[in-house]
Picture 1 (spheres, rainbow, N blue to C red):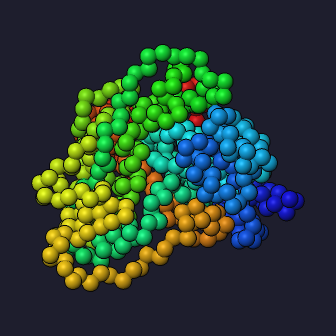
Picture 2 (cartoon, rainbow, N blue to C red; picture 1 turned 30 degrees about the horizontal axis):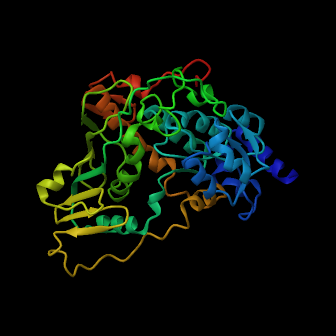
Picture 3 (cartoon, rainbow, N blue to C red; picture 1 turned 90 degrees about the vertical axis):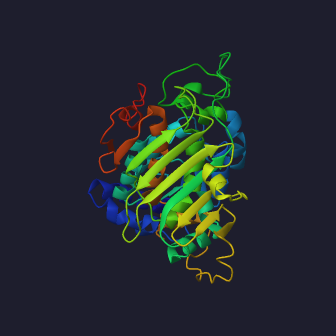
Length: 431
């Protein structure tokens, strides 16, 4: 224990003297640790995705557990009885600053930013659930801070490790369908617009409602918000765009080397000030990237077949992306893909695999924390993707198409989006 405290003290001192980037570049290895030494991890949010993420890092030392709901967190407390338990991540990160190497954040969208920033400011590596944060400016600050500090990060886009997606990326990059200037992505269903609460009972004893609200505006408790439907309320979630966008757009982002879009427009049902929509269409424009041409990326949240598939007479077959190239098309999902038209590609010789199998999504991050290669969905990669996802919601909610200046986080022809991109927090939660 003394040795562990010493390496953490070295980290603290090096940060204070301006050499943190050098120390942190190689994770805990640079602080004198063995690659076999276990990380000391704090997990914030233990229900839902939190349970899965906790299981993913359970081979390390779980030193702290934080959740506002005793009922949702109960199984985690039973499994890790030696971990210190907290309702509020703020005192946890202050009191255990010398005992934590890394944090895992699996709270609702509106409470990703605050624990992530607080942890990374204290030089903790960070794993965060998608869509990374609740607003574009939050995502950018998280991305920049992680880079400045040299921290190991990973966004919860777990499907990135699926071998089928690797083969898709290799096909696109090899030029199998030629230049790709158009891509369509979608999520099926009509989730959104939950019923307005009919009553507001007292919060159950096992839930710390004020802490659950965190930086969001004060409102009375309702079972309409928790434990799951929060994602369809703008104050807390980001709808199906935020819920699925990072998973599905990960495929074109990787295959087409995308980063920041330059134009965004959206359409859908009448905007509700509180609730996310049951359907949504978004159009993004991306500039040329090196030898790659400009791209139009269309997103659909729809219960029916996306219009492009109807026009081309293509069957869904579990797909969620269609790449249209100068030499053909590629229709794909997480676990399948097909080159079209099929007769044209009969006998096609596929490129040799070049993307190695992942050792495991959580293992990638843990290895990076210990000084290994960066994780595949580190914030420098996934941050711009998360910003793009959130900008689709912004375009829909404001009802305005805009030209996006990513460097300045501004729209050159629209100022109404600033209120959504730069949120205000309730008293006591200012950053």
